[in-house]
Length: 268
Ligand SMILES: Nc1ncnc2c1ncn2[C@@H]1O[C@H](COP(=O)(O)OP(=O)(O)O)[C@@H](O)[C@H]1O
Ligand SMILES: N[C@@H](CCC(=O)OP(=O)(O)O)C(=O)O
Image (cartoon, rainbow, N blue to C red; front, side, top):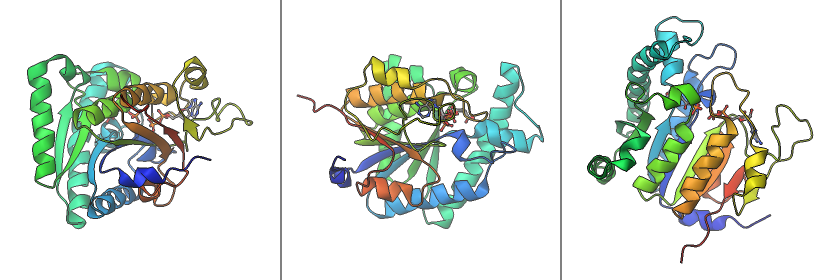
């Protein structure tokens, strides 16, 4: 087991939470207790002196409840409409819960391609910087009206890695419905074993991540590995852990051996 206590020195942390970690498994509807517990932990991390940026999925899940739908529409524009309704309600919930803990949340809806346009990228960076300077908590989701990759392929994972590079974070935490990367899909293989550390993302690691079999989340482990690559290449460490683990955020930041750590190579 590697010593992770150096993680205590991390000061700017991006936390991504997936749809499957914010919803009821049987109905796919938003779980208020899961959301509340997550917000409480983020607020506490912020109280401990860290800067925290949240990347949250869940717009489609909340939209389903709001529109009284049993399941996601098949067609893309239907999903976009559900996300549009859901995003507003999701953000209302974040605003309300953060306010209860004396924090202020600001919404950023972005698309991954902003990195290709220097001006737009700078605008986004400036907004992040300014929100952090005000002591607010940026809450990010993909703009599902403008870009459709997320609701088609469910990839807020790579979005969170891009956000981590934009804000020059020193740690990215992905909270999921699984406690880390296993050597094979644990939902299909009983003998799958968790990997505690990944020092280099090679073909072997990529092979471990087969598709997701969760009905709510959509990206699976492949997009998490991709996120680790993006983060690590910018010198940012990444941890995948289970959102249901008690006090998961503070325990990761205290250096407990939870989930999988993708350690960035030391940049020369
Ligand atoms: N090697 C692996 N290790 C862990 N999980 C895996 C692996 N391969 C596939 N998975 C699947 O990826 C899922 C996590 O992805 P996903 O459901 O998209 O979560 P989220 O909503 O948090 O983004 C796990 O529940 C599991 O079914
Ligand atoms: N923008 C979509 C993102 C969906 C998504 O990426 O889900 P996940 O695989 O759980 O991170 C939403 O908020 O529903």
